[in-house]
Amino acid sequence: MTQIRQDALLRKEDLLAIENILYETKKDELVARTIAKINDRYPSYANEIGYDWYTRRGSAKIIAAGGSAKDVPFVGEDGGRETMKVFTIATGIKYTKSERMAFQAKSALGKGPAVPIDTIRVATARRYVAETENRLFFVGDASYGISGLLNKSGITSEDVAASGAGATDPDKRLWANKTSAQKLDDLLKAKESLEGDGLFKARILVLAPISRLKLIKPYSEQSPMTIQKWLESEGMYFDKIVESRAMLSTYNGLGANAFCMLDNDPEVIELTVIEDLVLGDPVYDILGDSEQAVTERTAGAIIRHPSAIYVGKGI
Image (cartoon, rainbow, N blue to C red; front, top):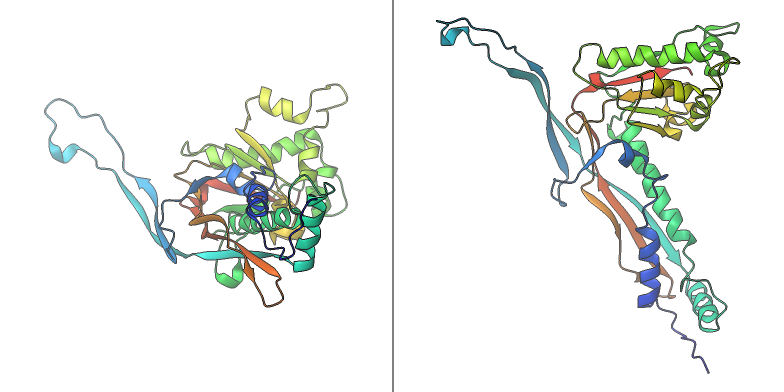
């Protein structure tokens, strides 16, 4: 007869099941990591990090025969040093002793789930940590003095043109009230802002899911080509078009839905991960309930060139 454990401690196979779920890579959760390269070069014990930001200066010139060293121009940088605090993102997984006993009994009797323990809470913990990582990356946290992609000092952040239909300027900015050509004008203005001086490339376009849907509509009644296909075929192609709820007014703190366009070269922006997702050892209280901490340590986004980021508001 199958023996059912009465102590209901988390077994090796239980912990393995939890880890398998916790460390599963979900691209739809890890939005910040699809945009920026991870910088994990800082030591795991760091409580503060520093990085240099700069703007290149200088030139090169043609020197005729007989020129001297004093005719040679030198390059350099204008910039400074910025420091950022490291923060811990934390949540926890808790199972009562009776819950663990029930899981293990069902498993022993062949009536349990495919994994030895219910992992819904594990997936929820993973998602909450990822969502907090995304929030720090995009909007930071004012209470801790953290700036993000959408509110960093020096980025270009402005209302899109009030060129659509509607009675008020906010109505006229909405993509729902704009023609395909007017939506493309908003994107072209952003692209010109980033690429006009030849220093950066508009590689990434970040849109709210509702705004992304506007790009799959036909360009016009006469053309079945979608707006996105037009973008690609006419040279306004992006390396990635990323969907993120961070562009929604309920999330971004900008008072309106927005889009973000940026150059995501590591010289421009990185995501700091001081210590990646860690599952703590189970701790039992006097009643036998188990608790495990799930943590990550990060300082948010390193933004060396704010001028390589454009935010269009009001769409």
